[in-house]
Length: 427
Image (cartoon, rainbow, N blue to C red; front, side, top):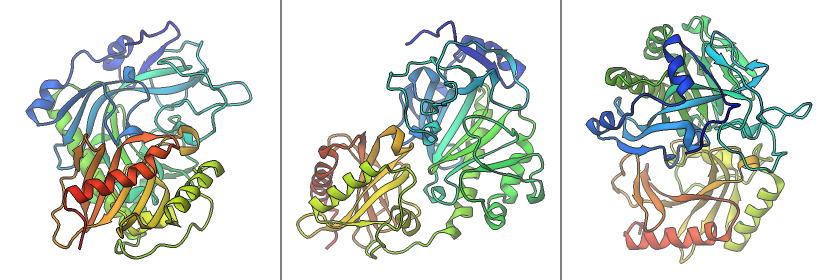
C-alpha cells in the first residue's frame, strides 16, 4: 500500500468524520456485515463493471462488497476517500471540517488545466497533456471519508448521461454545465446538475417520485448526501465511513429506491425494439470517440463483414442492455457460421482519455430461454460474463483493453464458442 505523502490534504463533511479523514482509512471493516447479507468481500479490489463508481487507486477504497443489496438490486457498497481538487481551497461549496490543504501535487496546471487525472469521471473533460504516471495522493486535493453504494441503471445512459443531485452548488469534478433548483418539483434545497442539453420538466417530475421525495427529505439532515449518474452507473454517497449495519442497510435500500425511480424516469425517453431489427448507421460523430478510435472500429467492422450502427440508437433500442458504460461502437451482421448478432464496445470512462473499452457480443436467445441473475453468470475460463435479458444473450468480456486484435476477432470467436458449448444459439 502506498504511504500518504506529506502533501496529502484531507477534510470531512461532518465533525465526527475528522479523525477518520486525518487517518485516511476507516476504523473498522465491513467483512462481517457483508457475510451476514451474503455479499462478496472484495477488500480493495475494483469490482468488474463498476469502474465509474470506484476511485482510481486501491488506496482510495476499502471494504468493497458486491452482490444483491438490501433493497433488491445487484450492486456494490464500499468506503471511499472522495478526492476533491484544490485551487487555493477545496472546490466544494458548503462547510467542511478539519480541512488541511497542502500543495505539491499536479491537480491544476497554470493556464492549461489538465483534468484527465481526476478519478472516476474527470477524464471526460480534457485529453491528457501529461504522460507521467499518476500515483496515489499525488494531486493538489483533499480526500474526504464517504460511504458509497452503486448499481447499474443502463436506461439512464442517454437521458441523464452525466448527472449530480445533491444540496451543494459546487462539488468538483462533478460541476456539470446545466443547473436547476428542484424546489418547484417537491425537493426544496436540492439541486440537479447535468451535462449537455437541459433535462425536461417531465423527466424531472418522473424522477422525483413520492418515494424519492421521502428519501431526499429524510436525507436533508445528513451532512452530505448525493447521487451521481455516470454513463449508466448510479453512485449514492453519504458522509463518513459508516459502520452501523442499520444505516448501511438504509443507505442500500435508498440507493435501490433511487435506481428504480431513475429507470422509470428514463424509459419513456427511449424506444425499445427487437434485437433482430436493424439500426441506422452512425448519424454523427460520437462525443467521446476520437477519429483514430472511430477509424479503428470501422476497420474491425470491415474485416468482419459487419455493418456499423449508431451507438446511441443501440441504447434507445435496448435500454436495459447489461453492459456497463456508454456504447462507443456497434456493428451487426453474420458473426460467423451463419450466426447473426452484434459486436459492441462500451466505455465506463471517456474513451478519448481512458483509452479503455469493454466488448460484448449480443445474440438472439431461443424463445423461453430463462433469464440469468441480475449479476450475470461469470465464466472466468472463457473470460466472459453471460447475461440473458429480454430475449437476448449478452456475452460481456471480463477484460477492458486498448485497441488490440485479441478483443476484436478473438472476442467474437470466444463468444461464439461459448454459445455453441452452452447450447445458447437459437434455432
